[in-house]
Image 1 (cartoon, rainbow, N blue to C red):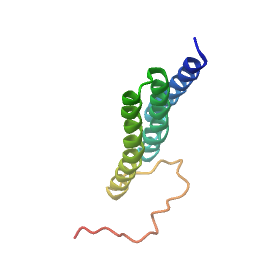
Image 2 (cartoon, rainbow, N blue to C red):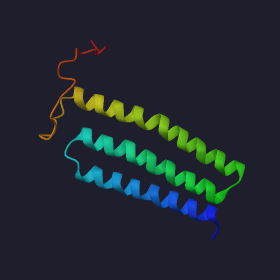
Image 3 (cartoon, rainbow, N blue to C red):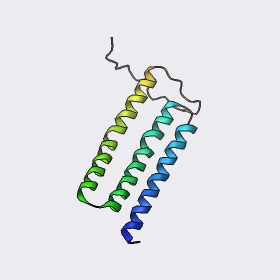
Image 4 (cartoon, one colour):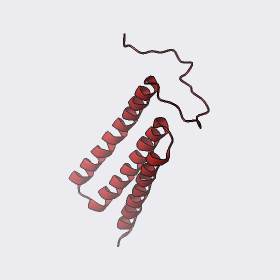
Length: 115
């Protein structure tokens, strides 16, 4: 096993650990806003680490290019999707967890463009 294989294995295992942590957070967190956080941040980083490790293990310009494109699309779309889910949930009147200490949007003016 070469040094590159060891680095690739460590990256893949780190990515898997983060992704499992995100999955556990989806089941354990109390409300949609905390679950949204668990679904976007650690899952995106976990996927990126896993794919970087896979790119190192596979090699080849075509494989690396495809995997880097997947990482880029994930890092671009996941935060936007999480923001839109959180915004829709808040506007729908979803209850905040009792552990929530501050509602920063409570005093914000409603900038909704719908009639």
